[in-house]
Amino acid sequence: MADRRLQVFFTVARLLSFTKAAETLHMTQPAVTFQVRQLEEYFNTRLFDRTHNRISLTDAGNLVYGYAEKIFDLYNEMENMIKDMTGEISGSLTIGASTTIAEYMLPSLLGDFRKQYEDVVIHLKVSNTEGIVSMVENNVIDLGVVEAPVGNKNLVVETCRNDRLVAIVPNGHPLASHDVVHLDELLEYPFICREEGSGTREVIEEYICHAEGCKEGLNVAMELGSPEAVKGAVEAGMGISIVSEATIAKELKLGTLVAVDLDPPMERPFSFVHQKQKFRVRVMDELLEFARGYCKEEG
Image 1 (cartoon, rainbow, N blue to C red):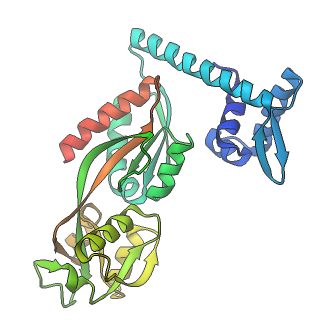
Image 2 (image 1 turned 90 degrees about the horizontal axis):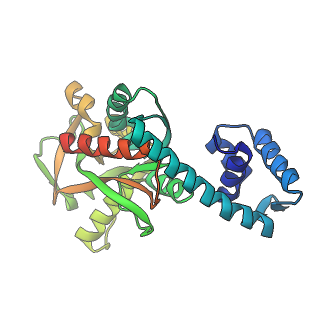
Image 3 (image 1 turned 180 degrees about the vertical axis):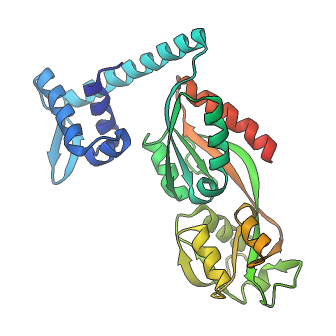
């Protein structure tokens, strides 16, 4: 209902990128540029300075941005009040999740949520934890679900539940007969790890640092970009790894991998992260409340 030109301008101004705005709004970049130019023609002034493939707000652009923010806050407040009166839950949300959560936790959660709220449209973006936090910071997504601690104190972080990590080894490996593996034993073997920025990798590195005082590190044989790739490399005998227990149910059932408990144990939080907004669309609050209940059942 709000002025589309103003919505597009506001998104470009927030992200300072026509490309990112087009992706966020599910529009083509020429369509985004057209909407902004229409608004500039309406006000008869430039709203952006464009130099060396970078954009910045002009004085007029900053003024429009400030008022647009107030307008959309009021719009959201009005929408929430009306939906509270009518009991309607509808709209769209963009959620971001780190790879492990997107593949193994969110499908059932979002599936159950959609069964209850059929009029809600959910867009999902997948990245590593670092990428998801960045998307939340830049308002590219409404809600992030991540698997590592979040350092930005300006964001709201709410722990969903703890996730247990275990060592995985291929059948026939010297550690496969162990019930528990100590850290110093892990360091003896080639290690398959996730890429830089991965929540799983960050937690593992903190675990090693804490236990070993950072004097020794893992013998990293390979860095891979997804839990599936890590598991495949371990199955192929290329090394061992540490993964979320939630990701290996199929492999344990098929007997292609062996899980070994860690000593000391390793856990990390699955957390929701979002902006501190005074007025959120009601569907966001409903999803958060639904997810909290889901986490309690699964925890």
